[in-house]
Image 1 (tube, one colour):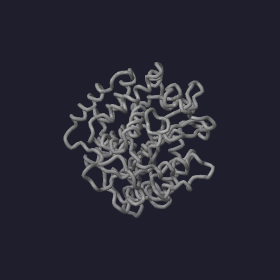
Image 2: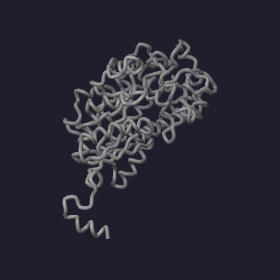
Image 3: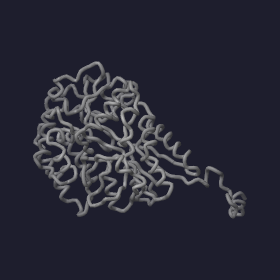
Image 4: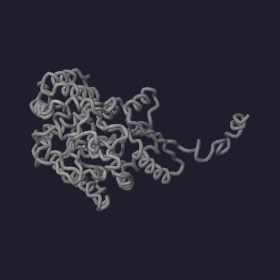
Length: 415
């Protein structure tokens, strides 16, 4: 009876819809943030809803963004907007014509410089924007202690874990990438990350050998790394503050403070070139990563949301709306946006702004097939870090050579 009544009334202005329900335009957003990060992002989306009457945002946070997004795309029902940490996947979606272009009214190139707006080779249009960024050329330690000169030689001092659910191995790729960047420079790094340099080239082999020699200094280091989750024990405060481990240094991105829980305020850092084995301590190059928003369904409301996420208002509110805070690629979010007493966050912002060059995480910008085998070979290498890595690198190169013609690569990884 109620359904029939709704049909009879459907010709009316509102039918049987309730204000704020069926009459709303609902935007679906998929992102990688859960817990405190999700709460902060939802607060940001609430601000957008308040500014756009009649629009609601349905956010789904998951650590399996790639798998959930792929499922939706294959089913023909992707989210309106998705946020991914891997540009290689987004470049693939661009090639498959599953992303919508972003106009100049959404992304202001003058406010997002460096490598953040790099696009697939041969394309000038914008397809994504950085919502949140992190510094990866960074080593954490506990305030009041000192990293010390022995860090370059003593692997037992380092908290290292390769475990990360379906993406295990990426903490090792971060080590190799940062070592390559600091030893061979940004040009070599850029050529490798964008597919112009072979995996058997000297800078790549050198980075793997350097890391292997370092991990071989203690017979237990590699085995421990393979059996340890990078997040530390469940319910704990990360590896650096794991009382069951005798280590005091961690090569981990600026997001690590979210792993440190109540101990986050006790964490301090130095730039990684000062401590990485074989690195030039004076290097001004910094590896970075980001979470990038892209539009999978085109609508006026979706464009409004993308425009909002790119705005200085949203970037400042998002970066400073949670503790510990996040970081933004927007040039308007300066160190003054963070409290004076938060010297760690202010110094991280300075690293972003004063670096000689910023280079995106290499595995994140590579095609998905290459990224996966890179992570797999990192784990295989750690099973015997004394082995010559050339055999493994040749295997990756063969996979690269077999990629279908036209596989998209980014035009650049370094700004």
